[in-house]
Image 1 (tube, rainbow, N blue to C red):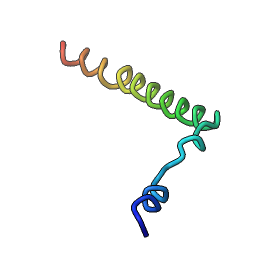
Image 2 (image 1 turned 30 degrees about the vertical axis):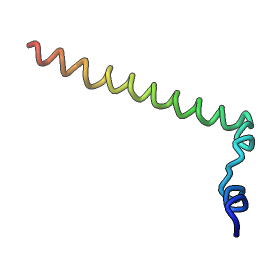
Image 3 (image 1 turned 180 degrees about the vertical axis):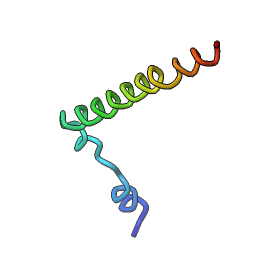
Image 4 (image 1 turned 180 degrees about the horizontal axis):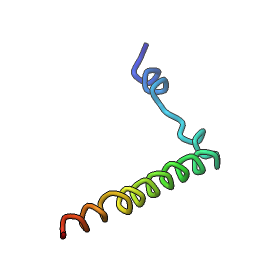
Length: 54
């Protein structure tokens, strides 16, 4: 097996990830992470700061 044949086997065609479903999946994941961070701040960090000031 020569080097050019090895390189073609290792090449990744990223065009198969151009489908809108991938963008939807990434957007959903980012949205869930943002909501998780927001709820963590609202439900845990803010009350902890309030009780720490008392």
